[in-house]
Amino acid sequence: MRRPENEWQPFATRTTFDTEQTNPCHQTARFEADTRVPPSGEVTSLSSAVCVCRWAPPLARGTVLWLIATLAACATPPADPVDRAAFEKRNDPLEPLNRKVLAVNQFLDHIALRPAAKAYVFAVPEDARAAIRHVLDNMKEPNLVFNNALQGEFKRAGISMGRFVINSTAGVGGIVDVATKAGLDRQPADFGQTLFVWGVPSGPYIVIPILGPSNPRDAIGMAVDAYADPFAILATARGVTELTTSRFLANGVDTRASLLDLLDDLEKNSLDFYAQLRSLSQQHREAELHNGANPGANPGASPNAGPSPGAAQDTAPSPDATPAPAPSPAPEPAPASDNVPAAPAAAVEPQPPIEYAPTGTTPQPGSPPPGQPKP
Image (cartoon, rainbow, N blue to C red):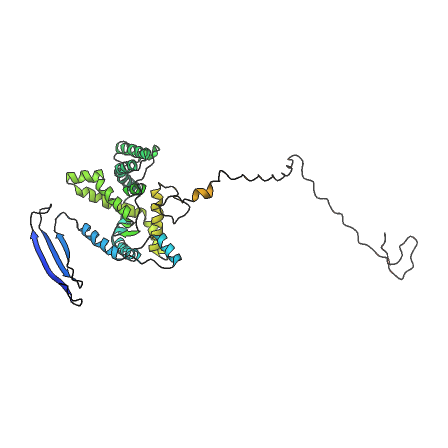
């Protein structure tokens, strides 16, 4: 039997029950089922489960809430074709939410991360900071090996393996970057780049709390790199997760210290810091995806897009086309001799003024008639 259209019951029933020893973490899980009766008369059930697992990180719960808020904060694409093209080029449909997240990140940066980075630069000498950076980079080399191999870049993977062996031994655990001095340059790679090589689209531009500018593909890549890191796996197996936390904090402070001047100038001189940061981060990431090469002449092209189908037709000549006759060469001027000096310009001798015989006088013998010039 259908209910009247004007009758609405927010919650017909609510069932709450607790279960113990039924979930993997052996904790108490509480399930709530809310049954609603909408005006259409069809019964729908909304179920929610809250697990109080002690190993569930609070950050994961916050991430879920943030993703839900992200989906609800999408900006509406403009109707004007020009504005819509610019909107699609920016690839930032979540701009309203991203600006709020960036404001929170700036607040945290100004009260914590930036002062810590300035204190780090002030207290630690430059050589010591370089040694710390070398150690942190050397601990990332195994991930570079894996990702370069997954991308099919076996030469780059071999170079990364050689760098890790050399710096871990001759470089005393990476304190000294012996491999770079030997001609083995670092070969950056990450799982986000691997997904790009596999053809996974980047998704929209997002600003992740604390971590900063990114996109869904690179966010997944960062998570995979963090969980697949051999040193993190070893530290977790040995129960010394403090080392992983210390490494994460040291890497964050060192990275922020290397960007002190750049971000300070950008924030001080930009009319729109958010737009400038978005543009620079997208350009930098696009260059990283192509291993530092120029991805193309069109800066607004998507890093996932291949060459235009008509690009080859615009540049390559048709095989059936008749070649145009070559233009006749212009006559070359005669080369100037190095031994013959140039002739000087002819000197012009000054001419004496012309004197006329005065009129009304008797001409003398041999003199011109009046009004005629004298010889």
